[in-house]
Length: 254
Ligand SMILES: [Zn+2]
Image 1 (cartoon, protein in one colour):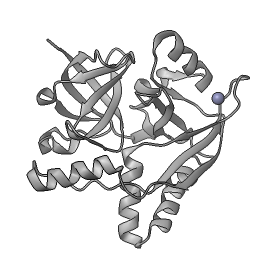
Image 2 (tube, helix red, strand yellow):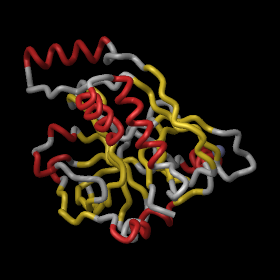
Image 3 (cartoon, helix red, strand yellow):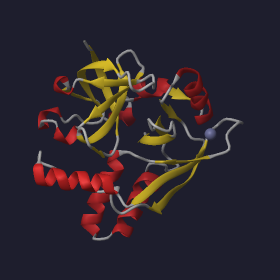
Image 4 (cartoon, helix red, strand yellow):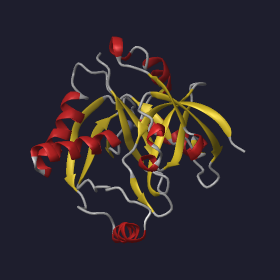
């Protein structure tokens, strides 16, 4: 049976279609012993509303080591046991209460994380980029893959109830370097749920995909990576390929 863990949620990724669970979100956070944990899979929007936890909220859940996933931080939560505690860590005094959980986990560079990935299956981390030179916006497939469109059609016909899941028609990536002599620079995709939500609300508000993409760039680059911000990236690997992506941004003032 599983063990009960207490997790400070710091990462939620944009939902992906799934045959077994309708859709899946990758959640990650920090345990009260100060190490990273990944909770996967969670069919977040299909959980009852009282289970909808926020970023920087402490949650409790019964979890089991995920045997199909060799990444060291990956645990499978027993979905029925997910319990948001309502203890949410605010950003007062320049994120003073968040820093003690997050900053001790900072790694030197992506190069160091890749070494630890090879040696110990590390798949989550936080890094302090030396220089963030751009947020690159590229057009992406406007719709889900045919197999996922087919899945949505079946669910609409035969149930269970299917919530609209929009495909974001752009790829957003950070271009940055690390403070490490081995660094040749990186361009890494951002999969933060917050980014997808911002894109969709800006598109609806301003009525166009191009302007919405520009609003995302303004928030995730001009604001979050501004000169007066002490910007860090939460990073993690995509299960099948081991490729690193950006899962979230930690951006208190300097
Ligand atoms: Zn690097």
